[in-house]
Image 1 (cartoon, rainbow, N blue to C red):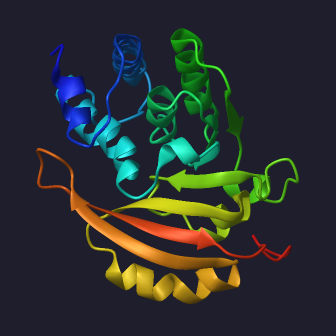
Image 2 (image 1 turned 90 degrees about the vertical axis):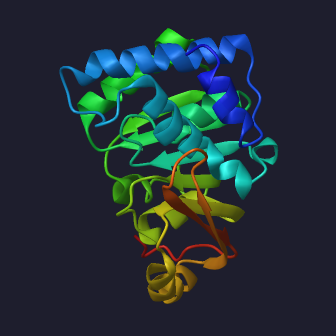
Image 3 (image 1 turned 90 degrees about the horizontal axis):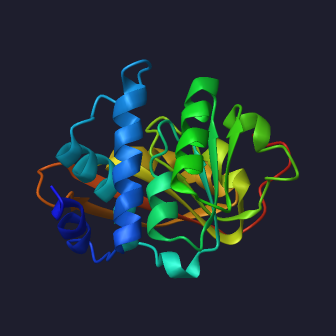
Length: 222
């Protein structure tokens, strides 16, 4: 078990320190603990968490150099994926985790405290409300979301011009991408690329849709 995490992350080119490994392990323990009293995830077994949550969250390195990103917002973060693994692996990031369910926010705040993380905060509310708030609108280099229903209309307003919105999608995404091109353009974005891959050691197909923010989002959205 001790080497599973490090070896899995090495497959996607990420090396972590012993301290970061401890943080990931503590995160897993808290996930298991809290999951007994509330539904955070259907996946709690260590190896599966590593594969389907940690590696999946961090595989964004395939399409984005995270060392050149400063500010990140994770919309509809749930149990903290992908935002928390990104913060642990890339401590320089300033991360905002947004979720509409208060008990999930309580869990996330506990993880942040237990792991001693700084420059990361949570907000409880709906994505469409905070996207209108001047403190958050067009303030981020990168917006991520693993919530498959997330709409560009809720996410692109958070991204500054020149930044990126990268939703994590399942393998089959062509139809959806084709159908969303017009909406993305209206919101000031441009679909730059779609990168498909399989999660290492699994047959799970994943896709990243790279959406570049090329101009400001009109005030009427969302």
